[in-house]
Length: 354
Image (tube, rainbow, N blue to C red; front, side, top):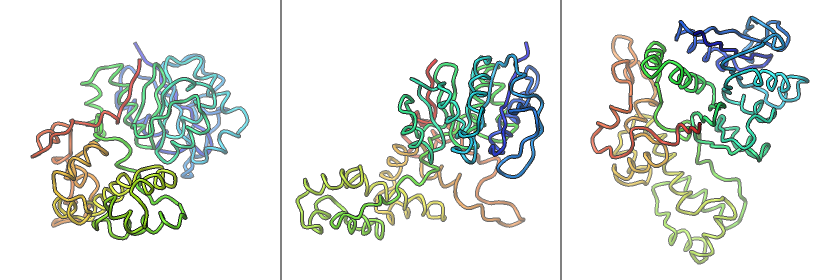
């Protein structure tokens, strides 16, 4: 039986939010019919300036097995466009399941499709989604979330992840693996969005006691920033300092220090430092401490992270020397890495509820 996939495109849509689902389902081939629908059946222009041809107008769609709603570069502008949210709701009403890519989650939420459901979106917009739609349980670190027939995913390339999950649901794991191999991507990437976002930015407090401490930690992460040492520098008790940190930053002194040190370790690894050097210079200490911190926060080992995000310097012969097709990191290779005791992939990367 054929499975119909409708991708809703509109002016200002993110190009990859449209192209990624199209690539996955067309690569899966037989069994899928894929079309692009637009608000009025006319071509649309993406945020990148590329025109996308329309197969059908939204009002002409009578039935779809899967509806994909991409994200807009200008979320507020999209939501203000007369009729578009209503069109998303109407399309969802004739679809068996719905998947949003990136900020497409805002369109689903505005249409009431996420009320009482768990959802995710691009890490940069997760807080705004939660504030704007309090009936939605936002999971900010997930790559994608399934809650019944509704799927939401993180930014841009996460459209590939969620559509591979849909292919696996329809055609089985082997077909999803075949598509992933063809596209040279993870079938299920390890870790959540924390590994891609700048999670430990300095909070914007101007408190006369807390601000100098924050600046000191950022300036030299490897220095002594124990609770006792910081309280002594601020001239207050450890209990009072902990309370001030909670009020001004939303976290504990230890939590802030660990976040800054993890950020420093990530930067060092991306710059080419080894695990031992990154652990020492960031202030985290030992290799094992760094591995445990990465497993807890990012769901990957430091060396796996470095292999994926280190700069792709070109080596002899003109080939990129950092990561090749024979050295792609997979959950199985992570499990076999020396001293790795964490899970094969972060449980926070994917959340489902049928």
